[in-house]
Length: 118
Image (cartoon, rainbow, N blue to C red; front, side):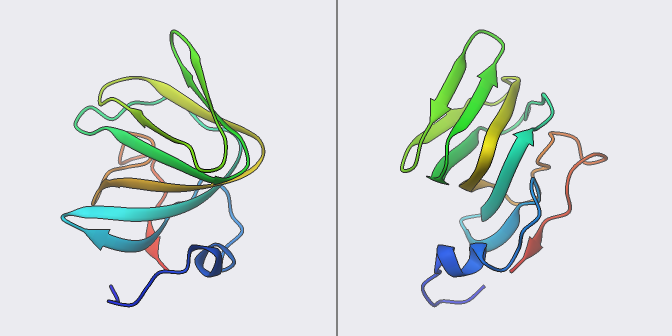
């Protein structure tokens, strides 16, 4: 990865597909991922890591089994490891996600989107 500043808007302009995280940087064994979301994702959990969401644009609802968490631009939420969740975006949402390198976005390597660097 480059040692230059990362322009998130410029990186977001390079792709249009939903639920397909793009690696834009790395630090301490973690990937910095940008994703565009729309619709409802699958219920899933990550047994070994928390799931960090930072909403850059739009409104994201993270469904948990006992409640819903609604996030707007500039808001952050961390889903604790092992907790089932289902992100939902009625309109297009842009998010920054931070997770350990190699973490499958569905919690299962067989069904996860392939992550590529942009």
